[in-house]
Length: 217
Image (cartoon, rainbow, N blue to C red):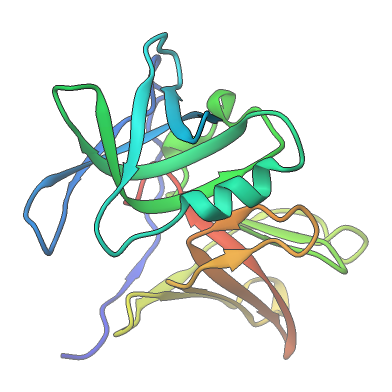
């Protein structure tokens, strides 16, 4: 079946208060997957997640064949709690079995991200720094010193490997943002993400990491 292309549609979702939680379906086990974000800490070898806006903690375990807590332990060596954006199944015993990791990061107050719920994807790279945000209104590319940030219309192509390609021909430039489902570690912060990214503008290639926002699970 050929790839499906579609235009990004205008519009935005209103922000919602409280915890940032999303439910999808695990394709292999058919169990509901709940996406939770919050503070991730380790105490005496046990990992705990305090979801955004909540006071209770969930004990974090890993699904069979999945591993992210070792990476979190290495990142936590920098000191202080971590922010985690995870997917998994919550039990009635207060446990949260993680089967997906969208991102685990050290810095930033990501629980207070005002645009997360209307974000499709966010990507960034270093040396030189660049960033891209994708939402229902368009794609915003930021390259300090290169061009002014603006919202660009784009075409999206979903790829057989589960990744996607976003392209734009706006302002006389050919712009491509490629996202691939591949573990990616930020070269400067050490933060962990579930997507690798490539930004291509008129043949110039810059690499980085990315994650899906609240618009896409």
